[in-house]
Image (cartoon, rainbow, N blue to C red):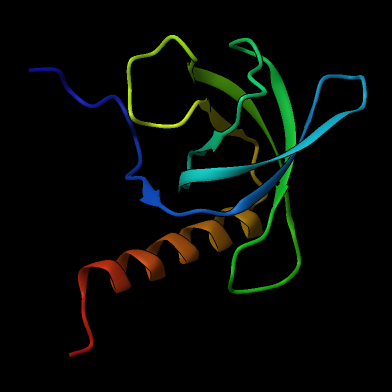
Length: 120
């Protein structure tokens, strides 16, 4: 039995992400597969090497203003992986501003409550 190494619980959610990588002007759009206060998974075929620093923007459904963050590629799900899950990259957030962290935490908590508690 292996222990889960994640520090934060992941929330399954699909959000559009605009990703900027490297010093050149590489820009493309992907979708999250999940998010937590520690990072997110971006489903994309545009994979970057482990350790690559990326900047990206996404919008949570509670407010229209985008969240701009930086992160580091910590793991990859590559094409040769035998998995029904999408290709992509696990990104760890870097140096989130307190207001951004609070906004992500609130979003995750509200969404988690609606998943586990039905209004019926």
